[in-house]
Structure formats: structure tokens, C-alpha cells
Length: 149
Length: 149
DNA sequence: CCCTATAGTGGGTCTTCACCTACTATTGGA
DNA sequence: TCCAATAGTAGGTGAAGACCCACTATAGGG
Image 1 (cartoon, rainbow over the protein chains, first blue to last red):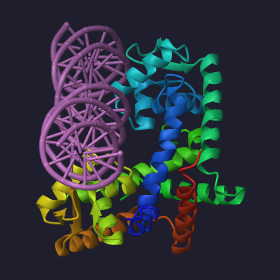
Image 2: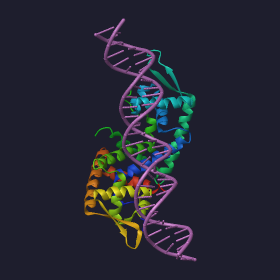
Image 3: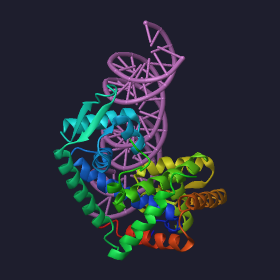
Image 4: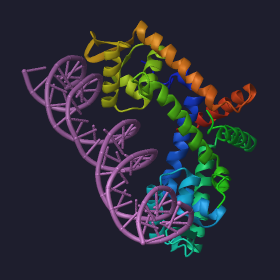
């Protein structure tokens, strides 16, 4: 039995299957770097949202990132323990908790971003610079269409 | 707070992140169709391997698909119950079990493949025919480089 | 014939993830 | 002032995936 030929060609002919495999590798690579700092993908997504859009109430973070409010609470709590975000009651509406990125959080995010780009360089190693741009453009288009069935 | 702007741009600038998101959507779409038939991705991968390369011993399936031998046993068992594969002792080496695709299995695989292409049409809806080909080519390259760090 | 290695199998474990529920504190309108 | 709705939180559930160990049956070399 010759196994050198590898995975079934009929699967590799499916773009969805390739997307699934490469996406898994991308996710795993990112997660690994984050895990080295005791974080997960949601932590980075949360920091990025705060950096890009400024302070959020947790509910707004949940809406923006499409995650469960109770999971947001946990993630924010861990980020607060790490000193990456500040939580403070909104004086105007004391139910709300305003989550703000700290300087330390901004620094951490920059490092995470550098990590992510290193992972990207590994995974996209077979592609030329132009190919990487092309892939990015295509993925953006695909991502843009994801919501609507 | 305006949330209409959606996900953090600093994340969407990462191809790895886009790959992770689109890959997840692809996987979820595939899994959903398979689940409607009581199957999972490994079942389809196994059927595809048998269709592409002919009968395998379970160990060889495990090697080819990079999965755990004991998980192969479970998947093959479920496929056998469904009538999609036959198991028979290899007379030359009675430790080995030769797994063969049945006609019914071949038919099922064809249907799964049609399902997969329908999912693909949904996910890649924003792309033109040429874009889809381009994406496929790029993903093939990326996939080809995955093994080596 | 014995001993080691291998194929298959049945049971787990561990982790991650998405989701859900119940509860408290607070708000703002009727 | 009372009540329904909302923000946050603690805790738990269930599915899925990857992995691992113990065991049986068989093979094949010495």
C-alpha cells in the first residue's frame, strides 16, 4: 500500500475542504502563540475591538464580536486580571461596565499582532507577496458575504 | 455606540484571521450537511480515501488521513453499519481488516460531494468563477506547504 | 516454541467551544 | 412607586475533537 500520495484528491478538489484545513492551521497557529501568553483568540479579538473602536460596554463587545455576554464577562475578567483592560461602572448608567484598554493592553496587543504576522508568514510561506495580497483580497470578499445565506 | 462597523479592522487585516473565519464557516457548512445524514467530516474523508485509492487496511487509513487508529475503528464501524463499506479479514494477514467501499457507499459519497459543492457555492458566492479558481489555486499552494515549519 | 511487534478495538480522559439558565443590580417608563 | 426590561455575572451543560491506554488476536523472527 503506497501512502505517499497522501490525502484523497477528490477532497482536495473542494475549495471548502482546503479552506477548512488551512483555516484550521491558521487558527491553531494563532492559538498556540496566544496560549504561550495564557490567552485565547477571544482575548485578542476583544483587545483589538477596544483598540479600534475605543471603550465599550460589555454588551456592545458581545454584539460586535458576536459572542455570548456571559463569555464576554469571563474574557474581560481575565484581561482585567492581566492588567490589559480597566473596568469601571458607567456613572450615567450604573448597570453598565465601561471596558477600556490600558497602555499595557495596547502594548500586549501590538505584540500579539506581531506574533500573528509571524504565524502568517509561516502559513503563507509558499505564496509570493502578490499572491498573499490576492489571497487576502479574495478572503475579504468571501468574509464579506458570510452573513447572508 | 455605533456597532454597524462590525469586526475590528486590525483583525480583518490579518489573512490568518480571515482564513480562520472563512475556514470555520466552510467546516460548519460541510458538517451541517453531513450531520443531516448522521455523518461527520471523517466519514466523508474515509469514503473519499477508499474511492480514490481503493481498499485500505484500517491502519493505512489512519496513516493516510492522519487520524488515530482507534478513531478509525469507530468511523469505519459506523460506515459499516450504514452499509457504506465492507469489512473483511485479510486472508494473508488475519490481523488486518480490509475496508472496501460498497456501491451504496459510492452513491452516498457522490451525494456528499454534491452537498459539498452546494455549500461551496454558498460560501464562495461573492466570487466570480475566475476568482474561485484563483482562490483554489492559492489554497492548494498554502495547503502544500502546511507540513513543513 | 517463545517473544516481540503489529492490527484492531473498547473503553476511557481532557480540552475547547458555544450556549443556556438563574440571579442581582439598575434603569426608566407607566 | 411599581414593574418590565436591561447589564452583568456565576455556573453548568452538551457536543466535538484529539488523544491515550489496556487488551486480544495474529504474525514472524530467532
